[in-house]
Length: 154
Image 1 (cartoon, one colour):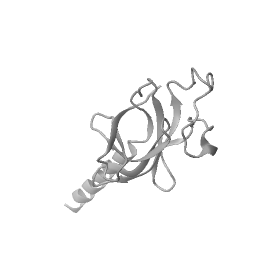
Image 2: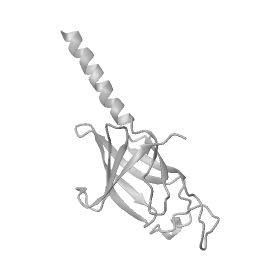
Image 3: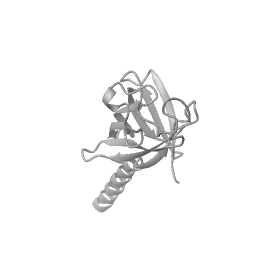
Image 4: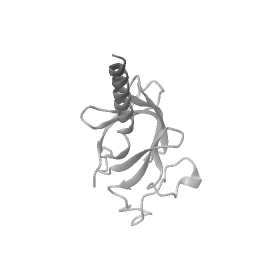
Protein backbone atom coordinates (compact mmCIF):
# COMPACT_ATOMS: atom_id res chain seq x y z
CA UNK A 1 0.00 0.00 0.00
CA UNK A 2 2.85 2.38 0.84
CA UNK A 3 4.37 1.83 -2.60
CA UNK A 4 1.08 2.69 -4.30
CA UNK A 5 0.71 5.91 -2.28
CA UNK A 6 4.31 6.90 -3.02
CA UNK A 7 3.84 6.16 -6.74
CA UNK A 8 0.60 8.18 -6.85
CA UNK A 9 2.26 11.09 -5.03
CA UNK A 10 5.15 11.13 -7.51
CA UNK A 11 2.77 10.89 -10.47
CA UNK A 12 0.55 13.68 -9.14
CA UNK A 13 3.49 16.00 -8.41
CA UNK A 14 4.87 15.33 -11.90
CA UNK A 15 1.50 16.26 -13.45
CA UNK A 16 1.29 19.46 -11.40
CA UNK A 17 4.83 20.42 -12.39
CA UNK A 18 4.03 19.77 -16.04
CA UNK A 19 1.06 22.15 -15.84
CA UNK A 20 3.24 25.05 -14.70
CA UNK A 21 5.81 24.35 -17.42
CA UNK A 22 3.20 24.03 -20.19
CA UNK A 23 3.04 27.83 -20.40
CA UNK A 24 6.63 27.98 -21.67
CA UNK A 25 7.16 28.67 -25.35
CA UNK A 26 5.73 30.96 -28.02
CA UNK A 27 2.21 32.38 -28.02
CA UNK A 28 0.43 34.74 -30.39
CA UNK A 29 -1.93 37.39 -29.07
CA UNK A 30 -5.35 38.29 -30.39
CA UNK A 31 -5.38 40.86 -33.18
CA UNK A 32 -5.25 44.50 -32.12
CA UNK A 33 -7.57 47.08 -33.68
CA UNK A 34 -4.94 47.77 -36.34
CA UNK A 35 -4.60 44.04 -37.14
CA UNK A 36 -1.22 43.58 -35.49
CA UNK A 37 -0.47 40.56 -33.33
CA UNK A 38 2.43 40.03 -30.96
CA UNK A 39 4.36 36.78 -30.74
CA UNK A 40 5.48 36.36 -27.14
CA UNK A 41 7.96 33.82 -25.83
CA UNK A 42 7.23 32.90 -22.24
CA UNK A 43 10.25 31.78 -20.23
CA UNK A 44 11.12 31.05 -16.62
CA UNK A 45 13.64 33.34 -14.94
CA UNK A 46 16.42 32.19 -12.63
CA UNK A 47 14.28 33.50 -9.76
CA UNK A 48 11.44 31.15 -10.76
CA UNK A 49 9.20 33.89 -12.20
CA UNK A 50 7.50 33.64 -15.58
CA UNK A 51 8.16 36.42 -18.10
CA UNK A 52 7.34 36.84 -21.76
CA UNK A 53 9.33 38.81 -24.30
CA UNK A 54 8.21 40.08 -27.67
CA UNK A 55 9.97 38.01 -30.32
CA UNK A 56 8.05 39.21 -33.33
CA UNK A 57 5.20 41.43 -34.50
CA UNK A 58 2.97 40.47 -37.41
CA UNK A 59 3.16 44.12 -38.56
CA UNK A 60 6.72 45.06 -37.48
CA UNK A 61 7.25 48.17 -39.64
CA UNK A 62 5.64 51.59 -39.49
CA UNK A 63 3.83 52.18 -42.78
CA UNK A 64 3.19 55.92 -42.42
CA UNK A 65 4.19 58.98 -40.48
CA UNK A 66 7.53 60.15 -39.17
CA UNK A 67 8.88 56.62 -38.71
CA UNK A 68 7.58 55.05 -41.95
CA UNK A 69 9.81 52.16 -43.00
CA UNK A 70 11.34 51.71 -39.56
CA UNK A 71 10.83 48.86 -37.12
CA UNK A 72 8.27 49.60 -34.41
CA UNK A 73 9.56 51.24 -31.26
CA UNK A 74 8.33 51.82 -27.73
CA UNK A 75 7.25 55.38 -28.55
CA UNK A 76 4.58 55.63 -25.80
CA UNK A 77 6.91 54.56 -22.99
CA UNK A 78 6.71 57.05 -20.09
CA UNK A 79 10.52 56.95 -19.82
CA UNK A 80 11.90 59.16 -22.63
CA UNK A 81 15.14 57.13 -22.61
CA UNK A 82 13.20 54.01 -23.66
CA UNK A 83 10.98 55.51 -26.35
CA UNK A 84 13.35 54.69 -29.22
CA UNK A 85 14.01 51.09 -28.19
CA UNK A 86 12.61 48.41 -30.47
CA UNK A 87 9.53 46.56 -29.27
CA UNK A 88 11.11 43.30 -30.35
CA UNK A 89 13.01 41.94 -27.36
CA UNK A 90 11.26 43.75 -24.51
CA UNK A 91 9.48 41.89 -21.74
CA UNK A 92 5.79 42.24 -22.53
CA UNK A 93 4.60 40.23 -19.51
CA UNK A 94 6.66 39.79 -16.37
CA UNK A 95 6.91 38.69 -12.76
CA UNK A 96 4.32 35.89 -12.72
CA UNK A 97 4.26 33.28 -9.97
CA UNK A 98 2.64 29.91 -10.55
CA UNK A 99 0.02 29.37 -7.83
CA UNK A 100 -0.57 25.63 -7.68
CA UNK A 101 -3.80 25.70 -5.66
CA UNK A 102 -5.44 28.01 -8.23
CA UNK A 103 -3.59 26.46 -11.18
CA UNK A 104 -2.79 29.89 -12.60
CA UNK A 105 -0.02 32.41 -12.94
CA UNK A 106 -0.58 35.44 -10.71
CA UNK A 107 1.03 38.66 -9.45
CA UNK A 108 2.36 39.53 -12.88
CA UNK A 109 2.40 42.65 -15.00
CA UNK A 110 1.54 43.25 -18.64
CA UNK A 111 2.97 46.19 -20.54
CA UNK A 112 0.86 47.69 -23.33
CA UNK A 113 3.15 49.44 -25.85
CA UNK A 114 0.27 51.24 -27.60
CA UNK A 115 -0.38 53.36 -24.50
CA UNK A 116 2.86 52.91 -22.51
CA UNK A 117 1.02 51.63 -19.44
CA UNK A 118 1.65 48.60 -17.25
CA UNK A 119 -1.23 46.68 -15.72
CA UNK A 120 -1.69 43.97 -13.09
CA UNK A 121 -2.10 40.64 -14.79
CA UNK A 122 -2.72 36.94 -14.43
CA UNK A 123 -2.55 34.05 -16.89
CA UNK A 124 -4.32 30.71 -16.92
CA UNK A 125 -3.86 27.76 -19.22
CA UNK A 126 -7.22 26.58 -20.49
CA UNK A 127 -8.24 23.00 -21.18
CA UNK A 128 -8.33 23.68 -24.94
CA UNK A 129 -4.60 24.56 -24.89
CA UNK A 130 -5.06 28.32 -25.16
CA UNK A 131 -3.82 30.85 -22.63
CA UNK A 132 -6.19 33.28 -20.96
CA UNK A 133 -4.40 36.55 -20.16
CA UNK A 134 -6.08 39.31 -18.19
CA UNK A 135 -4.71 42.75 -17.50
CA UNK A 136 -6.43 45.03 -15.03
CA UNK A 137 -5.96 48.37 -13.32
CA UNK A 138 -6.88 46.88 -9.95
CA UNK A 139 -5.04 44.10 -8.09
CA UNK A 140 -8.24 42.06 -7.72
CA UNK A 141 -8.57 41.79 -11.51
CA UNK A 142 -12.09 43.19 -11.65
CA UNK A 143 -11.53 46.17 -13.97
CA UNK A 144 -9.68 44.95 -16.99
CA UNK A 145 -9.54 43.22 -20.31
CA UNK A 146 -9.05 39.58 -21.26
CA UNK A 147 -7.35 38.06 -24.27
CA UNK A 148 -7.00 34.50 -25.44
CA UNK A 149 -3.54 33.68 -26.74
CA UNK A 150 -2.87 30.71 -28.99
CA UNK A 151 0.21 28.51 -29.07
CA UNK A 152 2.41 29.81 -31.90
CA UNK A 153 4.17 27.51 -34.29
CA UNK A 154 5.89 28.92 -37.33
